[in-house]
Length: 299
Image (cartoon, rainbow, N blue to C red; front, side, top):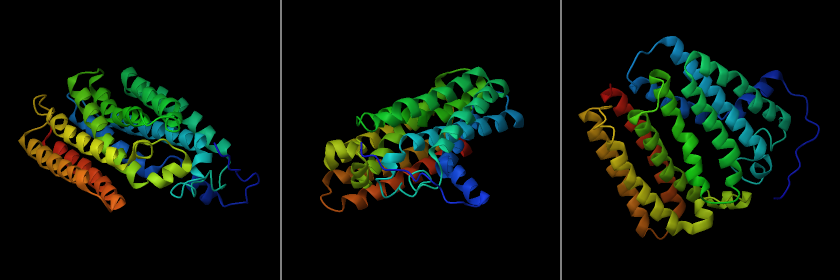
């Protein structure tokens, strides 16, 4: 890997600017999406819910997500410096010393995991630890070696709604696993679109994402296939009685629309980046609207 030197001497900065960069290590926009899916799993789970457990769940999840992202940025700081979309992050830009990210990444779980175990339950804390481990130890280094990182990375992204479920039920069961499967399958077309849209940038950073390794045509084929897979997986929530007819209608329409646009990519010849960007935005709209229908039509 090409080594990019990090500034050895940082210029004096205001405490507010430093705090802003420390917060940025946790990728707040990504963390907010994770918290939404966690809250969705908590809301849909059968059983007693209370404000203390909900607050502990969301706070603990936010800290674990922040730790995972900080460690990811610590490990990938040289790669980030090579890519346009990441080179202005605090570490590659030299605004923070890498030791700060390491301290945040190692320190937050020491607070979050015991708190989750004490204030929710051991199953939820174990799932949080699994998400942290799989994201940092497995997925992050694997991105530089294999396109199979796509499937490994979908695991920690699918765990948060399962954590929400187990925070209420205290166990793994069909309902929680169905939510896990839904988020796992959703991430596949979502990240395939990103890998194609930002292919040149990923190649510049030496990351072996799907589109870099397999090319645009294979990426479009997999994007279409995985978006089709979302339809039956999303409808699994109906026989499990997690949602009603309104959700079923929304899942069918949203899934059909996403898959339909995904299929158009199979015969696209030009404007690859525009198609990939539009498909990426559609995956975000799909998840937002699907969860809104699920929360309205759910338990």
